[in-house]
Length: 332
Image 1 (cartoon, one colour):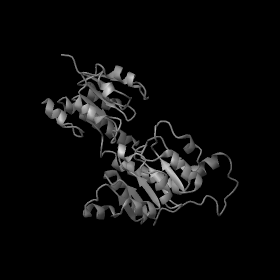
Image 2 (cartoon, rainbow, N blue to C red):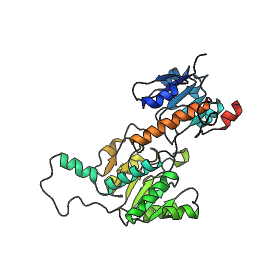
Image 3 (tube, one colour):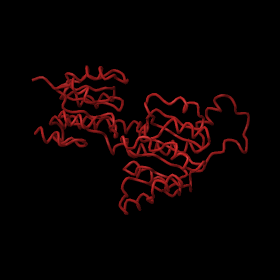
Image 4 (cartoon, rainbow, N blue to C red):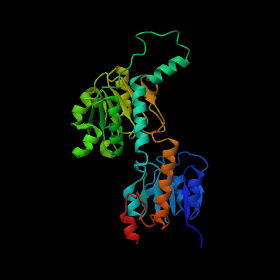
């Protein structure tokens, strides 16, 4: 009996892929790149399962060419690249990789925030350009983080991990979320709930951690940026599209906020040209979860989900992080 076919859209850890090969004929792309809808359709037309990344848009148009597809595992906690309604309607299960990346992403959020506040990127570029002729007492003045108010917009597990780190900086934490956390979690995180307007007005360093939905598009736009302190920094490790990148570039140029740090962008991998022109913004290519251990954990969880969907492994029949469990219930 032939094995089902699995398509893997990017190279990753061979020993983890080998677990998939035990039960599937695996076709794995040799390099990571973006695929057009037609290319995705061609690669999935004979596939029973797929492991994809955040740039792989799986929608009704692609699914129309993949009649045998039963399960898609997404390498990431966010899944706005997946049309979950279309997948469910087609009877295709889907999963993501939550929780295994929480602490690593929280570390990176702090790294970006610190780099923006203390002007690390600007100073390094200046030094590399041969501009350093000696220290200046009033040169490269940045903003402190210790003792300053940290604002978190979106207080899921990653937001909570970010908040817990603030204790080491003796920094008070304000947060806004679509629903308030239990008092016990607030105490654990040292965080106080406020409305969005208060968060914008009082945060010295604002970090965005909310998921992308159509309703969240441009949650931070020109008006929100004007409402922030002119000394504030903005860090986005959530999703591109939550921030109006053009409005942010204008705000940075006008001094409406002091600095920004971005790991995600509208239309990535493209970056708004006006952001590239601003020295007071730290830019990184969507790598908040990119530690060796965490990326291995993400890949392993994606494989676990595929195996479980096809009745293999300790979670056989119960993919651990399935997004639409009703699909498997309907198929059983």
